[in-house]
Length: 283
Ligand SMILES: O=C(O)CCC(=O)C(=O)O
Image (cartoon, rainbow, N blue to C red):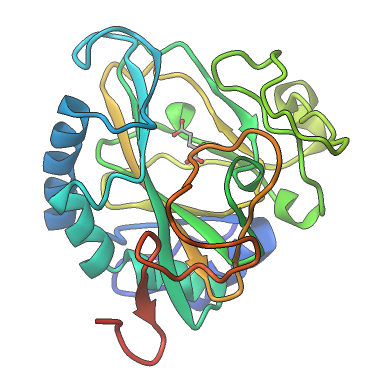
């Protein structure tokens, strides 16, 4: 097991960068200060009270109910607390350093709430097949706002980002439906729970402020929430200068029809602004 980055290390320790590149996922301890977590929690309340057009209500009734499983996307331009975090917290630089990028643009933010009693798993998947983006420089930072025991935390198949595989996206609501409508013959993603002996899995108990960083093609999934408390995660999805906007046939979520980018364009526009540059912070 690799050592985890500790608070006080440079913004991203060399060992963490190596783990991200070799394993496809890494845990950074104490990466985000408590003030940011408090700010984001206020944004989350605002978000749940007024969900956006691409929100997904997977299960449960109201936001207070046991079993409430909710996700929302690309809300940062409507929620000032999210915008402040995206523009001014260390997140953009952390993603950039992990990817070895010269600059990072925010692709989108993603709130994932699993109240206690959420039975649903987040199925095994890779992210990029669902998204309008391509390239190796795509990085997610999964930041919990609540303590998360290891048994309720996302799991990553170590090294799966190096397999060169694109698995067919499947619906989180109905995994057996023909959700993706992708014309090319993509393999169905294996049920990694049935082949645990063949792989190594990475997962971590988390405290608010710790981050799980992972690539756009690392296979991952997450259990339900048996912890007895709410699990809110604010996930930011970042793109480096080598990532490209992708327009593909088939279902994708979330979609950005008004972003003005064409297939193959770099990720840099009003919808996906550059937030961090290695040489100087962007305005
Ligand atoms: O939080 C979860 O349940 C799953 C997280 C995930 O799949 C992601 O952030 O891409």
